[in-house]
Length: 346
Image (cartoon, rainbow, N blue to C red):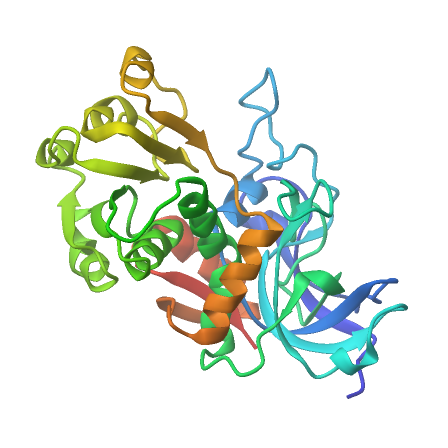
């Protein structure tokens, strides 16, 4: 196909409110050596899009400073970490046979090339992302999804939310027969945790808000606890193998007694508060591991791509929007009224 010279993109001009996210005509990027050019079929939204736009991550020594998740953002920056689409061009040293391949992009920028490298950057933050008609990525980060029964909107839900969730399950060593608790279970990562943990054969106890309990149960939770009603009181002491936590805050001191000796608490978010008062004796006297988990590794993402390729886990798409409606989509994301993922298409 013929690739145009310009495209429409939604890009940040700075940190701030919706006004700093502008729709603009920009040059179509050219794939460098080792890269592919992908025509975007769908791009999912994530909380990190809002927090990057707002500069809500703070800086070391100054938690109120405006910054991206890894520090300063090079503006203007096209947002969007999660991309499903089709390879339409390749750079030098890339197999030209990749043209026409349906792919899912690993959005992470890693600190090395090993299987267990750590993410230190992200599409839409440290390099331009998928709120656009086209995006470039390293060829080895474009995973072939040919044959997947899922559509592009469903596939685009996987990279950040399900990648973060899978990283938590892997680092928590969640297995068939385990009992796990998922906090924030109706959000993007939370619902992914419910689906992926249930697919592994775990018994899932999910904590969510009252209006979303049925949707979380439908995703695979064995029991759903209303977060407004002291949910940890309903979990027996020592019952839980692994807590998969995207909320933090008071969940940690309140929930630790529910974790069995030798269990694990994996945290990947702080929606309920980043500062926690903790009696560490509960950790060391019961050999409980408190594990921080940020996104996924290359090895994790390959497992995720296989799950997406097979279609055995189908993400919940709450709504789709055209690129021109990106501001409305981000406003809906911020409202937290939905269950599942919001996706830009077309």
